[in-house]
Structures are given as C-alpha cells and as structure tokens.
Length: 391
Image (cartoon, rainbow, N blue to C red; front, side, top):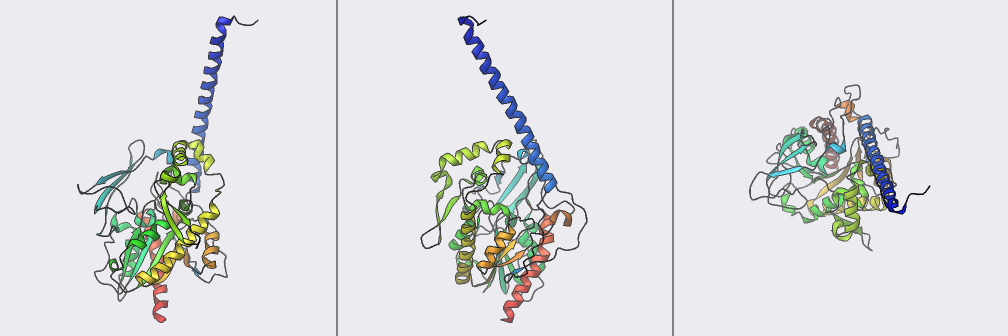
C-alpha cells in the first residue's frame, strides 16, 4: 500500500539520510583500514630491502660491501597520518623561516616536528653560512680540495644537529688527509635534482675557495616523482618550479605547479588528506615515470658539465641511498651516460643501526644512519681522489 502523498517526501528524505549516513560510515571504515594498512606496511617493510646489484659489466659504478653490524631487524614505526606540518621558528628577528633553495637572510633557524598528539619527534637548530649553505662544523680553515655534497633533506640533515649531518660525518673521516679536504653541505630540503642544478647555476665560483674537487648527489626513491607532476608530489610540493626539456634537450625551468596547474594542485592537496586516497594513489602507475627519468638524468648531465666549467670539478658522483628500489633502472641510465656512482641500495640500514636508522613518525635519517654511511662514503671518495692524483 503506497504512502499518502503528504508523507512521500518524508520517506524520500529518510532514504537520503540513511544513504548519506551509510556512505559516511563506509568511508570512515575504509579510511581507518587504509590508515592501518599504510602504517603496518611501513612498520613491517621499513626501508625496502634491495638485492645486491649483480651488474658485473659496470664501468662507472662501485658497490661497497656493507659493514658487519648488529643482527636482527627492527624498523621504527612510521605513521604518516600522525605527522603535522613542521613549525619553523626564526632565531634572528630579521630573518624568515623559509629554507633554501629560496634564498633568504636567515643565518639560523629552529625546526620542531611533532605528532598530532604533541609528542616531539625532533627539536633542532640549524645554522647557515653567508651563502645559505648549512654549516659543516668540522670544516678545516684551509684545504687542498673539496667535496660538494648535494641532495635533498637527507643531505641537509633534517632533524639532526649541525655536527650530526651526513656531510659533517663525512668531513670527520677526511680530516686526516694531507692536504685536508673540505666538505660543503649543499643539501636542499624537499628539493629535486633540478633545484640543485639551478642553485649551482646561481652560485659564484668564489664561494668555493679550494682549487678543485668532487661533486656528489645523493639519490633516493623520493626524488624521482619530484621531477614531474605526480599526485604524491603535488600534494605538498606544488610551490616548486616545473622542469622541462627544450627543443635542444636542455633543462628549462618555468613557473610553479600552483600557477600552471592550480586545479590539479588544489585537488592533490585536498585528496591527500585522506589515507584511503593515499593508499590508492601510491599504487597507481605513474604515467610520467619516463619523463621523470629523462629530466633526472639530464639534471645530472648538466650538473657534471657545469661543475667542470664553473668549479673545476674533476668527478661528479651519484650516491645511491640504501633501500633505493629504483636503483637497477637508475644504474642502467647512469652507465648509458657514463656517470659515476656509488651504490648502497642493498645496504640494510635498520639492521646496521639496530632499528635506529630514522626518526619514528618521520622517516628522515638518524645520526646513526649518517654515521654508518659516512665511513664508506669517505673511503670511496678518497679512492676517487687518489685516482685523480695518479692521473
């Protein structure tokens, strides 16, 4: 028996309300499940384990053996949903809290990172020199050559003090050389290889006082999506410039993604608030992966060429960070373009540091991780330096 007409709208409204509540309930359950899946995957996986490279035809790379370290595997928990935006607090009133590559007059800054519950992940102060480079406290006042260590926050040292960064740890092992080698920290938090290239283009050669040396770039899987408009990058990096290849095959830089792609950038920021979307998006194939590789390798080629002309750099070396799952493809392309590299992708940092390879709820390398890597990096760089001297 049909309801009287005067009650039909009430029945319809009830159906709509029940449907909406059902959708909200289903989405909430899916969001909770997605968050747990992402957290459990990261806690179980930690840094990805990569099989040792079996490329016996390598002409431009070395594959250092991992040191004998503590046995066992205990990854630090990491839950992206528990992390909020970083709080930047300037140490001098005249400064700004914006970090390089966007140059500023700030000489020191304090970075605090907390969970949503207010638990402090790290609270650390950074010091920059007059050229906006993070200081390397152990740098000798005079040196015979240099090492320019470039890369993202892994090189800059997000979360660790000035003396605990990877460049300063490498410097510690190069102080016994005669003449000494000076290490510079050219790490740029949240950057791409294109950002590093443009910083080098803007640098005055007189900012490097030694006559010659080595330029390194530390590569991780996080850096490849930053070369093109992947959803995961747009969610937080839409203010970065866009890099493209011109007709001559050279890298060019245009306006930011926010300006050129405002709708897609806004959509990425909105949807990446939800774990369900992250779970889906991180599993979607990257349609621009080939473009990203081309832009990345071109950045390396131009870094090498620019370094030789501008800073008298004898060698450009790509350092492949432990757990880098894209290392086979990267190595293939580096070999093709005759770019030197040091491959640490098969190193199991969690085991070597007793599970203290990174900050919990953050993912940036810890002091222990930097210390383990620095020993080998310094040794390999010394080997390269000795080969230059023999020439």
